[in-house]
Image (cartoon, rainbow, N blue to C red; front, side):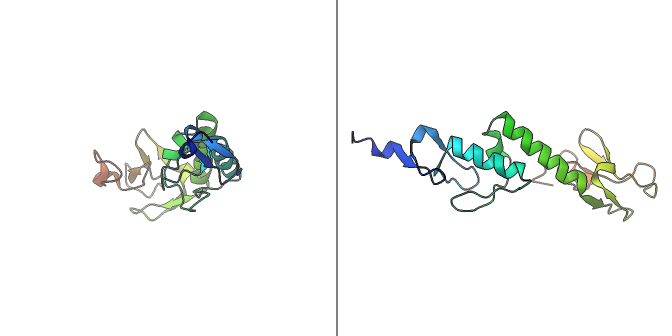
Length: 147
């Protein structure tokens, strides 16, 4: 060996030794025990099966955001967004204002809000943030984390 052993790691998915510049670091947990090729394959396979959140193959912590997805390149980003759309299309939400339960795909969408589709909702209808579903009256101008 040429003394460069600290630059080598063993991928826990393919069990091959790889160079550290080829490591994939999971953002959620910081685990770095997989090579990029294996990680992309792993994430892609899970997304194709409709799985989300995806667990880190080492510590099994679920990825909690799209931070990891952003590092994966466009094909995986497209899979992820398609899966998120199909999940939200099939789910429903109860309007806190008129108590009507409607499929999310029926809610009227604008740039930043979704609006209750029910005729029972007075004139404008109840509006919620399209990302976190919090009442827009309390949310306007505040980030999702702080609302």
